[in-house]
Image 1: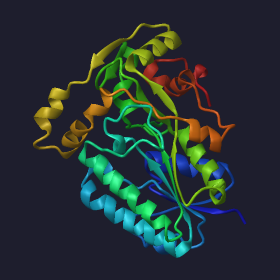
Image 2: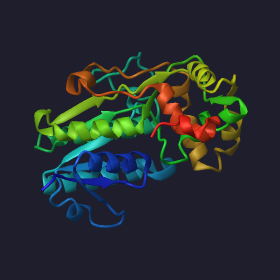
Image 3: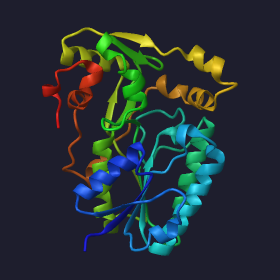
Length: 297
């Protein structure tokens, strides 16, 4: 019988990609239904992929600890290894590249919440619970619309416009989710060779908006200009709209140059291929007005 992976948040970006990646790798995949009893759903699972996240950053201070407690209880009862898509919020404005040795010094509330969440998993490792934190930059999902990258950054690329959220010359970390999910499945397959708590930075892609614009121009043959995101709209709406307030808090990430170090990742998965930016962009033929025949499968 194949190993069982319980996917939490399978309707979301990371969870959906993880469900596909684990199934392709030969796992028996079950998708958790929100509102059902998680411990029971985890019975027989070797791995729990925690892709649950409160939508639109809603009530993180209350909901993230609640989700964490449920996942810890399910993992303890089943003996499963937990796999979490970590993010870069915990690093604040520490000098990059960021890796497993970079101090957690968050400068935003959501960074503190995530740091506290990870600390709970690390503490649980002392009791025998195993966790893999696969840490990536902002998500790029070619199979589910609505992410920052497809909706805003390249949303108007076909009209000759790329949007930047901050300094267009600042390097920014991105995670192409089909790659990151495949990496999660590969690490999960090797889980018994890893430490009880593993923090694995996923190097993914790192590029500035200026580099992105040059790559889009090379790929399409049409010059694009860079437009700044109108943060004044978020300022005006933040007293009334929770998402606007939450996005404003993370604005610093688009001005602070950063990338994720890949030395540990390459030690653990030395043969793992990272999809180049040009090939990633071909998956967004609609936004770039590319001939669909150019798109990769």
